[in-house]
Image 1: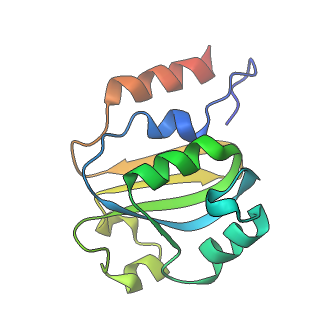
Image 2: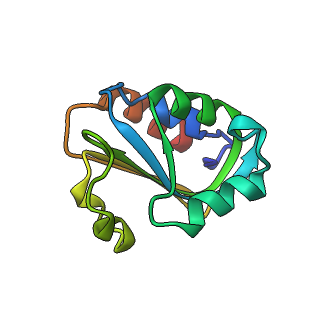
Length: 135
């Protein structure tokens, strides 16, 4: 996402403010550009993420690798799942992100929204990202 002076906050920047908690991650929506995991095309990855309630399942290392390959994020809905990853798929379908310990959304290439009900985020890091886009 771009600030008024052209400062850019990438998905990788946002993810650096999150601490690994051993969660499973589900990418429920993605639209963007870059290199996708396992050599799939952007279109194939978007199809996998956007067409099923389960989305794309990743562990922390896979998520970090994915974020490094993403050049631009247009839309994203990512949730952390505690335990085995089989958490309430009905809530996912309804986009009730309060069910999850952490959710990251990119909205229309303009805004990052991070919702956390755990101490898994570095608020100082997020404050720096916010400042970067406002300066």
